[in-house]
Image (cartoon, rainbow, N blue to C red; front, side, top):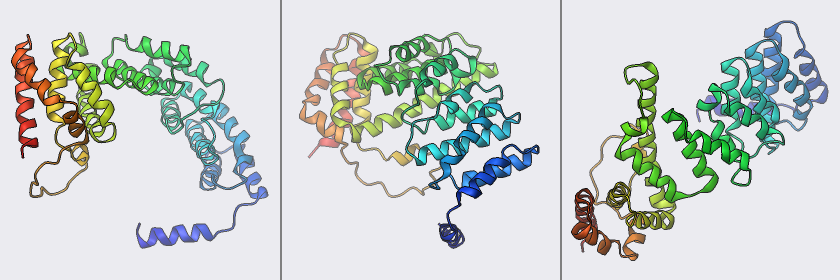
Length: 340
């Protein structure tokens, strides 16, 4: 933090807490005729969202979100209402979920984005989210990810996620796969999906016009999904080594050669520890002298489970030649990393 920012933070902290009267003054300004006055009041409320009496503004903020005629005012009110709820450690307010149905796209997007900061939702939110999921906007927003937070106990939420898995859009289906994983934590199922995306992305994209803007967006989304999958597996290699190792070994016995081959490739790729900063597009670190690769946690777990012998079996005996080739390549990496 710069000296100027530090000084400003200290100065702000030394200011006296706003009184109830000051809050009520700003709340009254939310009824002002001029949009600029209402926005100025909302800016004041946002700066004091952590004040102990900030709850006084909740009813007025919710009226703004639901009824103000100006989209920038509604959007600003959503931000302030979110900050107050987060500071109070409350669930996502129903009014923010309802704002996902706002007629203005910037408002609905703001509501969708800010709802993602909450782990729980107020009663009544599920009904609204299910309505959002039926809209064209809702399909492409984070709606299914919000539905996932209701978990497997809410059958209607899971049914909506399952329905999105059948959507014609890859982007919608991908979000649904992510949501189902969040709801079920079934790592093997999610890994299988990632393998299929990497193996044949064009098939999963379906019949799209790659020259159209919509087709280009779908293609870009698919590319980003593959990058995200690679990063997540690198994380699993360290943070969920036991689960990741178990899933990989299970897939080595799958009837599908696509999954056997993909699991074999992932075993080879995850043997060495991966620096997650390599996935950061803003990473501008200068290349450093290469040090010997370190074994990942999942590699150490797989070694204890006898994966090397299993890879040899696949290399020598698998009925599919592409699986045999993948096992051969993985064994080369494995042997190089674990040699004495």
